[in-house]
Amino acid sequence: MIMSFYTSFVSTILFPLHEQLKHHESVALRRQMEEVQWWPAERIAALQLDRLRAFLQDVGTNVPYCRDLFKQLGFDPASVQSIADLQRLPFLTKAVIRAHTDALRHDHAQGLARFNTGGSSGEPLIFFIGTKRVSHDVAAKWRATRWWDVDIGDPEIVVWGSPIELTKQDHVKAWRDKLLRTQLLSAFELSAAKLDQFVDTIRRVKPRMLFGYPSALTLIAKHAQKRGLAMDGLGIKVAFVTSERLYDDQRATIGQVFGCRVANGYGGRDAGFIAHECPAGNMHLTADDIVVEIINADGQVQPAGVAGEIVVTHLSTNDFPFIRYRTGDVGVLGATPCACGRGLPLLQDIQGRSTDFVTAADGTVMHGLSLIYILRDLVGVQAFKVVQESIALTRVLLVADATLPADAEPKIISGFKQRLGAEVQVVVERVDHIPAEASGKFRYIVSHA
Image (tube, rainbow, N blue to C red; front, top):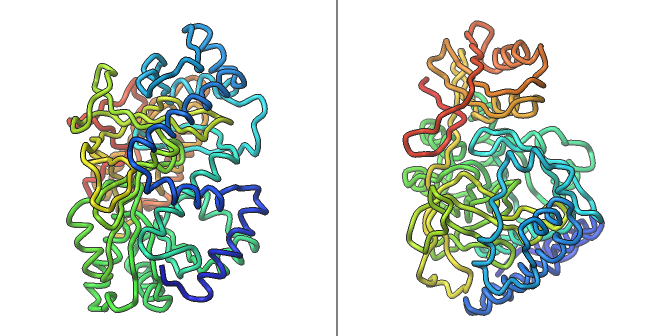
């Protein structure tokens, strides 16, 4: 990998120092992962099994929920001889996590941080992530980034919508981002004026890499085309996309307009950094950290080549374990090795993962997550779905329990009107359950506008 002096300084000195100050082991882990990726598949599988057994032994001793569950089932982690032994354990769902949040904490948890997510199912979830998992996730993402001849320290534009990234722009973080040469653009509002600003910023910064939602990057690309502005000579090497399903037309548009390759990524705050595309065009599973199972509607594990729900066991979540966690996403495991030579197994296909845009009364296009964040942190909310019937009418389907505050519905309506426009009619409908789409996948934002 050829990199500039400054990128080399950031990648080898500045960012490692940053990680050390945060008590992360990501630097050593990344080096180890870069070695493991070239191991034969059988050797990686053996490493995965060793890590699984050690992980289960630890949580079975030190996590109250797992300790009680294993005792009830007569499950001895030391007896685990294959990945198939995981099938002796029940699935972990959002409902189980909500019901046992405190009991899922490790007795000696280190650096627990609270997170929440709406996920693709629209069910709010509060969970915790420890220092070990953060280190492993950073290392896994870092390894995959370097597959594309870019590195931390190369100029980067991030088009994102999470409030975690958007509300913590304090002076320290601002200086850190400046030193690391990464710049955040909010995907929450994508009006014509904002898109003009984004296009101008990208042309001025000339980033080596882009990172963001495929839908948002596609919208920016099309806006640049509409304005007749060339974006393919800026030196952009790769556009990393994640958090939504990447469609073929989006890949083509992003690649053509920005003159770069497009690298798909799959994962989440809850499930972890699950898979990333390599330059050969295949999605490699982070098998040194995560066990992936594919199950059918009856919960039975399916072989490679057969579609089903993606279930993950993250081997670095000791502090708050995710064991056989049902993601709600549908995917297919690959059966053949990748031409790139990496021994990491493949995720052949990901189906049914999408986040729509919504349109405000004044024509402003916003990422659907801008409405999701109004809903998902409300106490008592079990599930939700937002249906934008037209520019003038938006319906909110809400499944909630008795703990929902009396002023929750007025807050929802007020928050939506602030985003969509004061004249927009927002109707909150309390329902017992929210049915899935015909595909079996839940969509939490549906816009007909």
